[in-house]
Image 1 (cartoon, rainbow, N blue to C red):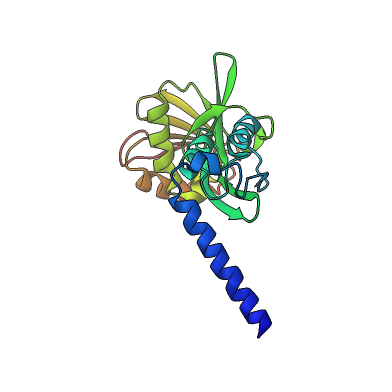
Image 2 (image 1 turned 135 degrees about the vertical axis):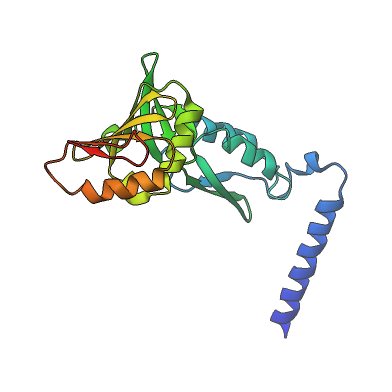
Length: 223
């Protein structure tokens, strides 16, 4: 019976404290006295910039576990092009747990002597040393990033074919050369992709074929 009373009193005390904290006008002052954040734990991430994490830690430390600004926390993290989803959990008495789901790298290209990475969220960022370039699609002669993204989104619908791509070369608007992992050159136009890919699948297993040309509508040339 005594244990039940103790639990009830504890519950009432906590409810009263929460009510007091959430109705007190000067919340900023309270943040230094009630459940001050001392620890910020991230799940293991590979690509989110450490500078952004550090800035967030500085922002959150010494704030109250009740009153810290979750929207600002999310906005700070979203400055990274690698952040896809964010889950924030408070753990009493003094810890914030942040779980980040990252985008993954898909392709890369060079511009002005720098390497840029395109991820599956179709966002571009500078090369990160944790990324293995040989595992990505190499992009060449890219003139317009929006056209590239449109083309990649159209291709990504056909995952089986997309997974075979080693390089993509821009030729001119709506014309692309695609080099597959087996060295086959596929000449594509950015229209009727479904029909083109069906034709490619017919010939792609023939080891003697080196070029598949689909530039002319309803016509295919192989070499």
